[in-house]
Image 1: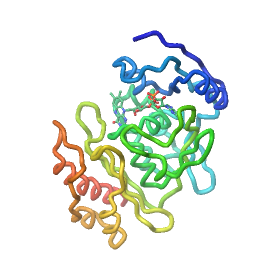
Image 2 (image 1 turned 135 degrees about the vertical axis):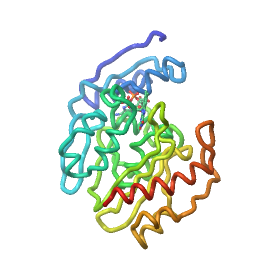
Image 3 (image 1 turned 90 degrees about the vertical axis):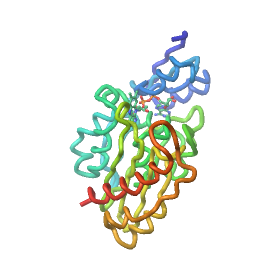
Image 4 (image 1 turned 120 degrees about the vertical axis):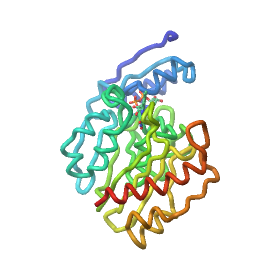
Length: 264
Ligand SMILES: Cc1cc2nc3c(=O)[nH]c(=O)nc-3n(C[C@H](O)[C@H](O)[C@H](O)COP(=O)(O)OP(=O)(O)OC[C@H]3O[C@@H](n4cnc5c(N)ncnc54)[C@H](O)[C@@H]3O)c2cc1C
């Protein structure tokens, strides 16, 4: 590891000011950032640790929405009774992330800012039409994810929380890579409070996307068979040593049908 300046911020404003002044990067659970630094894929001169900022912690209800602080660890979301009561699909998703160490260190905000193409949280945020709250603004899910490892965040902008509106029904199904548990394909299906259906897919393409064909089928008939019957176009999907694009396309329909079945 090369030499790096470490700063610990006490407030979101402090952290933003430090980032603007130093050109550094926020440090959350370090599960992606530290590994990227060891490989020299990221070389920030300064790390601004967010773990001492009380405002970024916690899980609370705000009207019909469940608001989760950006520094909340995956393990705390997985075990939260508030999450299990409000949107159990989020607790189940968090329980399926990586291994125990990753869940005990990794955070919701870090996972969203990182926007790994195979990460689980982007699928939940996009399908539930959640709002990503930053120190500067509120971003609709559809405006937040821009591409592979790319988001709408400015360099000195910090995610403070995510507001998830309570759906009628929601579930997530993933086909995990057996080594890392990252999604080979993961599909989050949600029937929102207004009855509309949103289906978001991770792992299959360079960035999370909505499966509009499956959404249309489920809007007519919300059944596992209706999801499974949709043929997903493989063009533009990822192909690597783990799976061909055609196999991933097939998995999208299969995981969508499993998610619908899990909605009950
Ligand atoms: C072995 C392994 C297996 C994994 N398996 C999975 C899996 O199955 N599913 C899955 O979804 N993920 C998986 N992950 C990733 C894991 O979920 C990480 O927690 C996540 O990618 C990054 O979160 P973090 O809190 O560690 O962020 P960090 O690594 O600290 O930061 C990641 C990036 O986000 C930025 N950042 C962090 N917090 C904020 C914020 N609040 N505002 C703005 N920018 C911020 C940082 O500057 C950095 O660029 C795995 C990781 C490992 C190492």
